[in-house]
Image 1 (cartoon, rainbow, N blue to C red):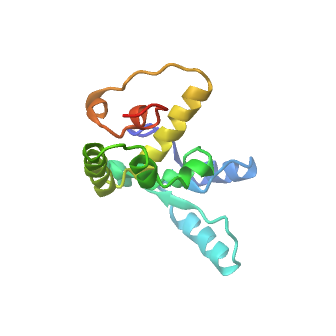
Image 2: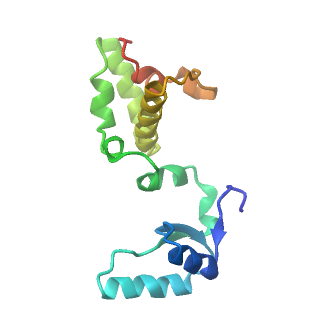
Length: 156
């Protein structure tokens, strides 16, 4: 484990994972040469199992969490959710629309729209299973569009 709580795999771990049928399409590794050879082979023979990887040193950015959103475990309907129109469709006044657009601009600048999609999925799952959740912590509590609010069945 590295300081980001990620398992850093080597060539042997990767081969073992492939043989066990584990998802190895996104990994964190220092062993790049063999993976590059494998990916080249996949490219030559049009095999779609190429391995995307990052080295542990790539983990310094906040964007890491969001740029890999395609690998997050959520149904495709949420991955494909047009979160901007979803949130704009929830407003009932010009004041609300301005606030939602202001916050969406900030989320877009930080490439964090996938996080909003995931939160909509998470809140829907919590509701479906009658699980109570809190308002959050830190700056998310002051956000107008964080899904605790934006997924409510009530008006703002």
